[in-house]
Length: 434
Image (cartoon, rainbow, N blue to C red; front, side):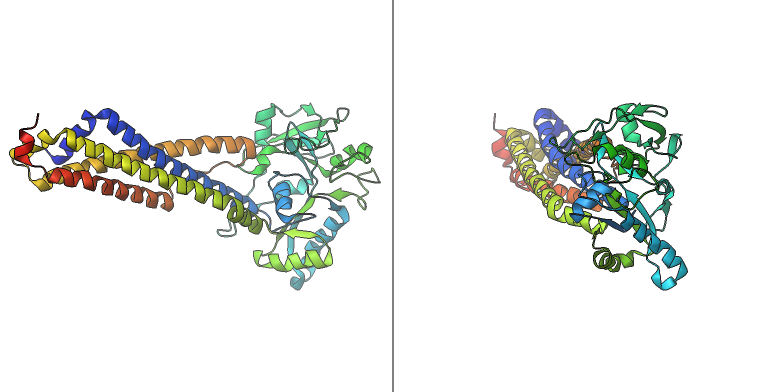
């Protein structure tokens, strides 16, 4: 009988102890695996979306501006005149006329403020739906606005509903709904105006894109302006409220929350920020920098703490392996003595115990990997529904593999002391033991 077979039999002769030890290892591995998977996947989704636009122009805090205008996760930071958007858009034509003036490739206005069942209503222009997201590394173009049902809007008070919104609310093409002023999902004290007399009509449902677009409702910017003409004096008026003219052809005094800008080259980001600040007196934010700052200052330390907790659990798991094997050796001293009497060498006894430690550790790692991916999958489903961040995959990263290797080494180290105790078996004494 091989040493592997002997080790396997001994392990499952004490199945409860073995099972609990495997569980302790699995919990440590599962915790780290889930943390690393969720961190890597969410960061990948954030980075993918932040690559959609080079600059977000608006007012207020740069981070809050990015979270609100790109990810629809925060309250509007303020408002800027629509005329500023038109000036930025004019730079597109300027670049076409003079190569030296090339900077703005695309520019789109967004007007935020209202919600429907906690989902943001985003006022914009139809051209946004044809905008391609380009991966700066591969050059691959992606179109996140694809219609699953109906069409894009053509007029005010027509709405195109994101995939997650449609699934959560049951909205479909042809349905109507009223909006509320104020994102009271984010602020319970926000003003709530019920525009029950004005109805948006759903004309289209977007396909799932795995982006924040899945949990937004897109409408013509003019409909947001017109809808708030009657509430211009209300407290906490929305960022897109219009203080004067009500006709859609008048833009001079209209307001928008932000302008999403794509440049000819990412290398122009910092020079364009100077232009925004000096020439337009506005706030400019680079999404990639703001998101990395968010990760480094807030999420990074939290992940480090959770990983540290995981390593503490690994240490506890190693201790349970050591104690379990040590007690096992004491309980089967006579068995080990019989093996020695039948010809097994001290080295083979040592090896058999080390194999037990290895098997327990490997089974713990495998179980932990399954547990971690299961938890990550569940969190991914929740994040897709709540935030529109769909995880592209649950692959195993190099960091995870490195961690698994560390756990395996720790498990083997934990087996050395029990194996050494077995190696020192006194055959004559232990054969006489009851």
